[in-house]
Every structure is written in structure tokens, then in C-alpha cells.
Length: 199
View 1: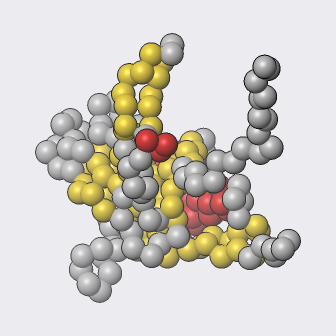
View 2: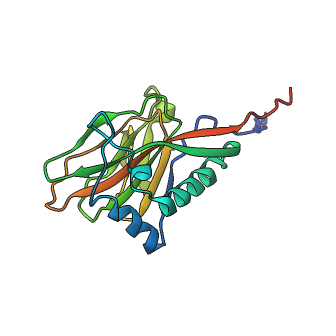
């Protein structure tokens, strides 16, 4: 008796997590954000500052919003992004960033002002409950190198922008280099048209 072969009608990857990486090619724009670290301005609370608005980084802000809209348009209809808050992170030798999220923020942007080979990566964690079907395996030449990895490492490079959803837990290991690892963290609000259901 011949075995009946069932064919798949459709295949969906439903709960994928978008992470975007962009490289800033314009040296003038990079210099604008680099200059903002010379005289950082603090807010009234004395603990943090809105870096981009306080230092008038207009060119960088325009480029950043453009990339945010480009990124979110991959999965949202007619998105309009706006910067809610931004601050600088200077990670000196022996310092690290603990595991954290950004609360109710729609989107997180991380821009690397100064990062080089040997600086610790940005680790972004899988927000799903561990299960066999979402266990990430990294393979090379059909050989499994690591099984059940619950995070991805994003290599820090000067002039790189990383964008990812605000609910994702992330962490930066200890900087072991003498040179500081400098980045800008940016919280983003995303407005978009709600798609009309076909049902």
C-alpha cells in the first residue's frame, strides 16, 4: 500500500522578533553626536539628561527618525516615530550594564559613538518561555556549535545603530578594555495606522 503524503497549505513564522542594524555613513552627523559628549547637560533630576534635545543634535535626530520609520515600516502600516528620551552611556573598564528593559517604550535605539574590537557586545534576550521549538541553535557547516541560546550578541561598532522592541531584556557584559565604550540610548514612541481586519 502506497503511503499518502500530506502537503502543507501554508507555513507561518508568527512570533518573530525584529532587530535592525544600520551604519551611519555621514561623518558630519557622527561628529555632531560625538561633540555632545564634551559638555553633557543634565535634567532637573540631576541623574540623566535628554542628550539629543539638550545638545541640539538636529542632523543626527533627523537621520535617527528616518531609520526608525524605515525599520518599523517592515511590520507596521505608515509608522511615525518620535524620540521620547535619550541619554549617553560611558562604560569604562570594569563597568557593565545590568539586565534591564525600558518599561512601556515602543522601540529602543542604541547608537555607538565609540566602540571597537574587544568591547563587550549588547546581549538581547529572547522574551519567550524556553521551549524546544524556540531553542535557538547556531550552526556552521551543518555542525551545531551552541544549543538553546537564549540571547543574541550584537557586536558594537562605532557609527552603528541598533533598533529593537522596548520589551526585550538586554544587558552589556563588563568592559575589559582601557578605552571607554560610549553609546547613546534612545527611547522611541511609534504611532501607526491600525490595519482594518478582512474578517
